[in-house]
Length: 458
Image (cartoon, rainbow, N blue to C red; front, side, top):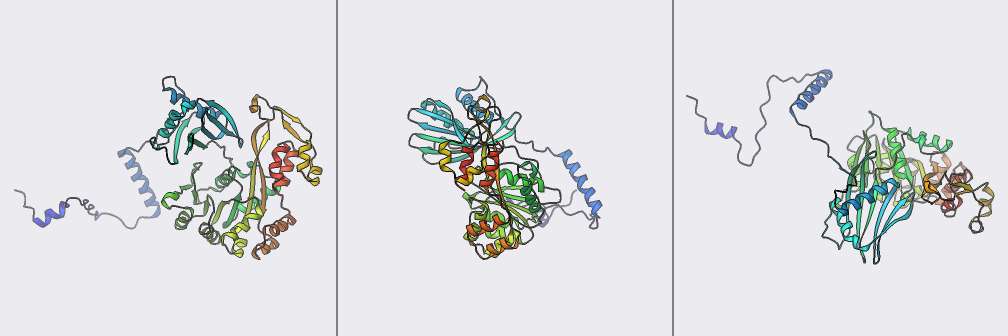
């Protein structure tokens, strides 16, 4: 006959309703003196045993981007539109409602081109289909909405579309940013720097601490430059963490975090957390306020290499912008190691490239010294290869300013203006955006009208 269980014993073995069961008693046979080799071997044994017992979760299966006659007409229309945008190398898709048409435009090589003018009656169905794909509320048409679509594309892998819906007086306008299609370079030497600038960039990347800043307008290639730097810096013995809005490319071996301002998870909050994650290298998507800049500068001065972006027009203006944010000038001079200002300009199509003289209108807008520097100009007359635009692809234009010479550090520490910083940097050999654009014109890489966007504004 089994022994009766006491009231106290029963309560110890059976947890109260709603409470978790107590952990099992530890085995008295355990060891507390495992060597590092033994511990490592034991980890491998546990993982092997667990893999045999457990069913590992399969990766999320992506919906394929295909056009099938079996699908509903609106599904076919949306899929065909996305496929055409990808084939045309589009970075953005614009769906714009008007009283008499629904206009579809693609941004290719930085310029918007009209792809289709559809009947306005298709607007409701097309927008609803995109809302469903982006997990939005299809019944809500009064306020803006944001979403994301992820599709599997043969030959391109996973492609993300960041979707923004905006109510207008004629209906909802949709703009889709295509993410993940840009071809990241394998190393910095493929980014297109000239020999001198390349050496400055490589030297800055060899620092174990300090700050590297990339500046330029939206769509100027800053993300590509920073991600390529991270790929080159990524090693098994280096801990890299990034805060981005959004994460545009998934980089293996790097911890990437997407900030969420709507729940107060901002860049400065992420950066504070990063400093408790034992980082070697930190990327901050953008420094737009004092809090983020102050933490980034502190991190750069305490043994971390920090990469980030700032929205300014040129490299000298970047260090001045940090001071304007509230960072002490002497901290800026000590923390910043390198500033890169960049733009993207369209390349002349190689299939229809021909020499072209400088027009009278162009001469009116250019200074005499600039005209004197022009040796030969070209343009593309338009062909099927470039969709009659005369351009295909884009070329980077860089302005690389190292902050290492005493004179430049002195003028920054003294709170010098953008003009003062620029003058000192030029005396030390700074190649400006204007000078670099002129070089690309003379080499026949781009046309004079395209380069004038940089030359006239510089």
